[in-house]
Length: 291
Image (cartoon, rainbow, N blue to C red):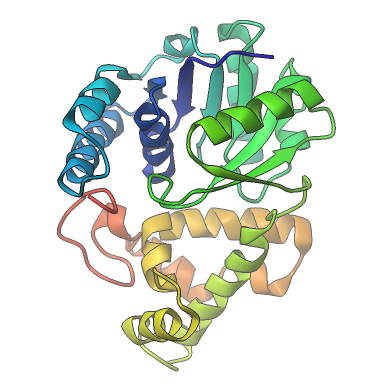
């Protein structure tokens, strides 16, 4: 079974930056990769701020934070992941992009390296197809915000070996996360419910039934959610929600999964959520959620 000491994360967006925190916080050497150097700089700053806040709240000691940051590296070169024992892909929801990335990683990483995809809607089997090590690819869907949420949906593809899945499961537990096994099916568990649910919320706003703040207040008070759906959409990114809708609708043809017109209009206007400073709500800081 693969011994995991160094973790690679592809994608320095909201999800990738959060996953990198989870790995570094658990004591793993962590390498965050992105072609966008500004995104890497932002992720490193957000990570330092989040971990500093964890010390203030008594969740971590300063020594733990110092050790985590010492083992945390960023790179804009794919070969910077050459020494990783597992690489977790957290790029946007596009099958061709993910397949191409894993194909390139197959040439860079040693034979023992495991590949994991954080996809929330696409097939693990399809993502792994043609990458050269289909038996060593597994689905690991972290939940936003990854640095706070414990659930990870673990999904084997049709060609994923039992050894790979067992190693990935043990790694997930070592991270301090809570894995749940799912089939390689569209949306797995959470997004099977969440993508159409969030679209229903957007349609509710579009129909003028209630304002975003009131919808969030009702969901949190009535259903006990810690974060309202509009807050969550802003955290996910409305452009990412469009990609999720396109991917999920493409395989399910469920009309509730199709992106609502309001969503397209907001993306066209540049109202993408937290990352643009405006979505359903406005933001004056790029601090990571929980910092």
